[in-house]
Length: 110
Length: 118
Image 1 (tube, one colour):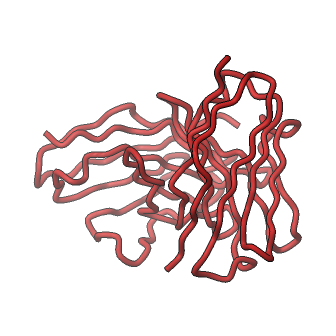
Image 2: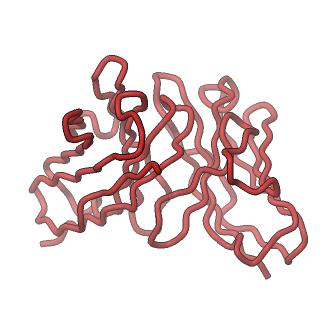
């Protein structure tokens, strides 16, 4: 199972919105609505931001939102803040009862 | 609160085996699966497999099928990952995570750094 494709890096200024794409195939994102997004900071375990494409766990800011179209999922962060600077990963349930992750995107807040 | 606390870092020689433990607390251990994910230096996250509590069986990613064993001990609410025949490419941070089957992972361990070095 190949990794999902994410841009290596994105950037934005405080207050702006950014979107991170995550492209898969018909064996994962295209078929299943089990896409999740994680924030990974150095020295910490990943933090779940979005599950089931566009649901947020309690306690996650509503500045984070998710969507999906065809084989591509997206994470949008609105009203960008300095604390959002981090690495972000998408993941999808895939055929053969497996999980595939994206390669990760480094977000820089300018 | 939900917590997953992993064992400490380890250094192994090529060809050796390693065991990483993950102590769970704060929730019904049998109600959720435990997934294992790793991140090699400079690389993305890689799903290794999970332990399904509904049938008490492990399911491994294809790339790890013949080298890993995932177990759980319900008496101590501890999940374990054993990896055999280590190579330099296995140098990574290994994470355990609580999951709603394979749809999402809402609590993660702090990570265990495993270094394979001669």
